[in-house]
Image (cartoon, rainbow, N blue to C red; front, side, top):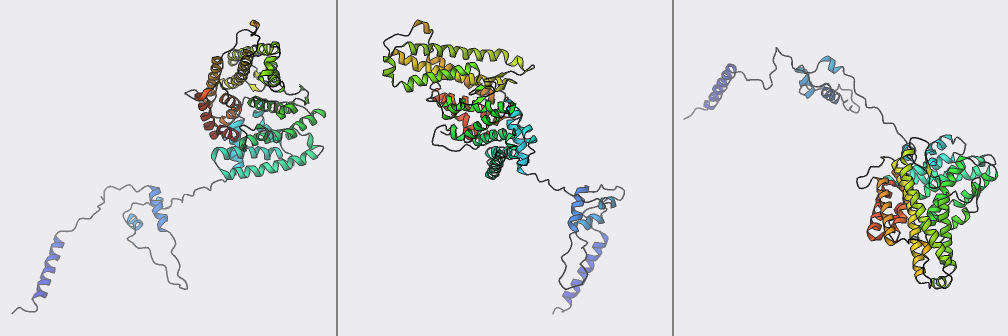
Length: 495
């Protein structure tokens, strides 16, 4: 029979045997540190993070005054300290403090962006002067500053797709209108040059926003909602003897916008142009035009009179053909002169960069770079496209007349001539915007998009473009105007 004390004695012997084995063979430490070599400490930033992480204050107990619990000795920071991996210098490392972010309002950011987009690389002098007009607006009204912020915020809202910026832009726009109305009622403040600058900025705001319209291209409402007021302001300043370079710069661009609209609307003269021709300025009556462009405008008037006032084609063919023949001859001569102007730009444009800047196309564009030359060249070529379209229309009418075309007319242009000019304008578009491997400036895309709006629209709507070129221009227009935040161009490209 087994003794009840057997298991107890066996357990005691096993414990005694295990103890002797442990004393004979000590266990090796998991991590050993040499006593002769000092291990480098952990990086200061790493140790500081652990140090500050372990120094978070404990949550006090409600209603109790018992001492706080001590930090356990088995925490990671305690183990590092026991092994000597943190020196006293490390523990005295000051805490890194991240500086607070400086808050900048959207007006400051969008204003510098607006200058880079429209003023820095502009070949129109008046655009270069916009920052100076903003700085000089120290009046109580400050309508020029409000108008500048309205344009800058609207442009950024279009480019960045930020509706909140557009809301702030409209607020500044409303403030500018209110303060300008107050300034115009004051006999002294009404003489300020900034009033004209504000009217100019109102026009920029309208084309950047680009209101929708049932018309294909409605420049009358999108560009000239303040047109009548602007013309009245020009007249007032001329009567008071206040006209200066600010008036000339604003008036020239106003004339350019009206000219652009008149040739886009090929069928008739626009209302704003008729009013503009009655304005008396120190530079003459009517719009500021160079002789070559004025001849094109006179040709358009004569053509519109023949086609609209005198009736249909049957009446035109019934009358003597001398009038139509003379119109064709003047049209061919004008087309050749426009080509000569383009050729002259190619010879004299680049060579004049180092000297006195040369102004072309009604004195609006300054030739300061290859891009500015291409931009001005495209405008002359667009006038030539318009002339070739009208000449071919007259050629078709004369074919139905009983009298043959006089030999004095000279060589009649053909359809292929119009197609060739369209291709040349497409090359200008590629050069201005850096398409198809061509180089272009990094800044100023919105300015180039605004100033190339007329050539792109006129080429797209020309009968010489054809479906392929017309589609190419429409696609490039949509891409460029969307990226540049040019609302009027986006609306025109989507039609």
